[in-house]
Image 1 (tube, one colour):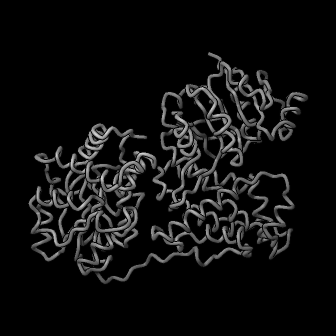
Image 2: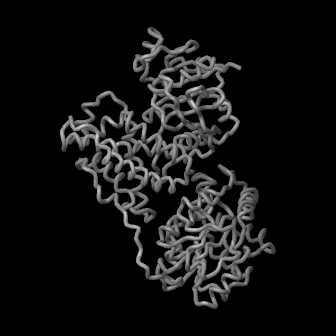
Image 3: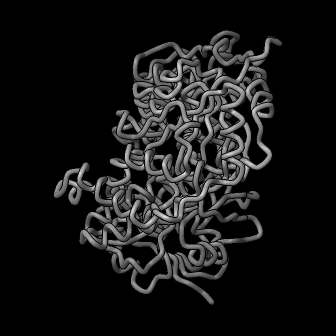
Length: 575
């Protein structure tokens, strides 16, 4: 059945999507943004976008922004075609006034950096702002290696649509798929949106190598592939690290790498990268490219600022991101574009001397006991008793976070202001202990491992984000007080996971070094904290997948402790 597709934002990518939609027999309504009046005038006059060399297919109608409400009447879905510079306008003018029942697919690529260094996607940014207005909407998004003019040319194109509503995604795919436009689907919104945004930050540096060749060897030297490939390798290496931080999937990363390729060799970012490589200052390059929209520079700055902030908080090392830091210095501080090539090398060789395992640091919830269900239902029960409104359901993404941060996420700042966080934490945990008492069971194999560790002189600690009362509750419930040398709770530290403070404190209290210890965790945030503390990590897959935990840095994954021995852990430590 033919559908009505309204595209708001008549830039190149939004306009290019009119081709597969109209060629599939659907009515397409192309609406300009406040900056697109001249484009819409040209489309009306010529039936062609000023940047394209082909006419629009039959079935495309044109509207100026003042008529956008008329253009969405009776439409089946909206495609948001604005650039990063129009994100706030699209959210405040369009999404805030659009019927929430109409699905939205966004082509805008980018990330928003929060105060704590967290990077969120545009769909998440829009959702939070809309929820504040009482509007419940999830926005779908498209990402992947696709230039607008090659899509118009019908070049074979592979992209992905992401969103939380699978039925909407399948409808969007059915509407837009053609013989040349191929669409994968995923619910990994943060992964896909992160990957296709991050490539913008790195395409800039790869393109600099072309300009550097021109500067050092002359404009007639031709393309040199060693330097481009070397920079491309480092770009994918850093993107991989960033995707681990974002908890994105491997498929999303691969799409981002494909998008990096097309951006380096066919995008606008290539132009400014070459100019910077040739020795132009940022200001000189921008003057030369006046009028060209460069979203990549926005993303590069935001991602760099986020990583610098995470480094300040002790969550990452800037040494892992030399290319990102270099690009930021070129843009912000006038640094020469010559890449720090030696910083891209690595040395993974090892001396044969074996390190003896001396300590194990166990997370508690989901690791010693499989109790996450009781935390979830006790949170709901406490909210019911207290008359609180949850902004989103309790989910595994919050696993391992400090309880203060969980309450801020679940309740929002306004509700948290009505009560002290101490009161909320105490109340919820009292309900949890009330509901879980009598149901405490050790995870398979953990008691045997703790006893073997005691016999062999391997110290054991608990490092949990839970409160002190919960830690003592589980220690008593399992009867393991004589097997635990140190216990650190969320009450004993300032920072929750993924900050390494909990594990670092436990290791220090045991009088050991990180390289002598293994952290045992079930949560992605916990694995990130263990890695940041300098430890090898064993992941227990009670609450997360093998892939997610391995991507976070786990050296080994197991469903429980059955068959795990101190000798085996010694081998893991030295693997």
